[in-house]
Amino acid sequence: MKTNTISANDIERQWFVADADGRTLGRLASKIAQILRGKHKVNFSPNMDMGDHVIVINAEKIHVTGNKEYDKTYFRHSGYPGGVTVTDFQHLRRVHPDRIVINAVKGMLPHNSLGRKMLNHLKVYAGAEHPHEAQTPKILDI
Image (cartoon, rainbow, N blue to C red; front, side, top):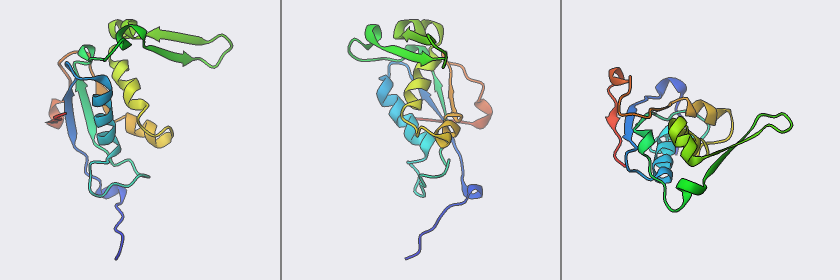
């Protein structure tokens, strides 16, 4: 039996739109990470960026379970001494609601240059409008 490998020219990318209104953050992020990675395709190859594009709308209406609304924090470090920045979930929801979904999906992708390349296929918008109508995205049913 011969193993068929796919080349970069043979990859066909689709566009999906996911509505985050009322969805649980982790469940939505894991489904999006699978699509960005390309694991839903028959010819999946773990060393290639073969995933599809995903548009997430209504990121400000995402739902979290338990006390995460009040207890969840996001940690950043600038690389300089004393450069720690800790942001809580409620503040991030008010100021940058798109970063909540981006951080959740980023943690579920590979932590290397391939994962950073896959993350570029994710577009997140706080409201219900997005500028990608020309790509005719399909509705992602989660």
